[in-house]
Length: 268
Image (cartoon, rainbow, N blue to C red; front, side, top):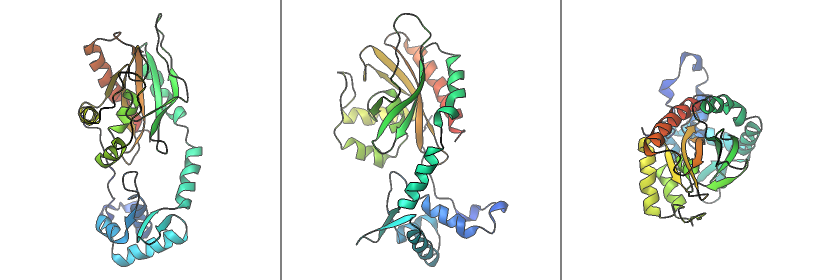
């Protein structure tokens, strides 16, 4: 199963009966939706080509959005990025967005099918890292694996981060892999050729697996969940001691996680 999804411009011809009469507003949102993590700036000619909206309409919309602060013109380039008004709107939305509460029923259902530790992470787009925001600790006796709430790891290190990295565009992956990759143990995957192969593997099977990449003695399986635009919001992960689950059990758990992550995506 390929979990890589990319948002596509909404065509104006797809207006529903309820949208008739708000065509200009629809076009404005279509324009704003072009600005994604892997494409942060656009020229007017590129906007026209991507949306099919007329040059005069794009010019008026861009001018208005710049005046209201939702777009910002990049000096001397003829290109535009999201402005402070858009950033402030996102911050206000985030303040009222409790991903833990939304995902809690999913975590509780997941806990009924496995006694291992269940971890909920979110994607921090600013630092290109994954942050643990909630967990249900293992009910098994003996050795247990858990993560500190607020703990974070970069996108290449471990199952939970890499499941999210695999959902991002090829352009973003290439950009990310150009940077220095931090190692946490001897098993942390930092070879860039191997990482690209692993990302393709995750995209096909729908979940990620790691062994002792962030903590010695700990393994993990994870699947990412997405927002309505097909961008990764976070991941669901199972953490357990190395060698506790055999290969077939890992495959079974990975497929179950994929189903739970797909259900979680429907909540956003």
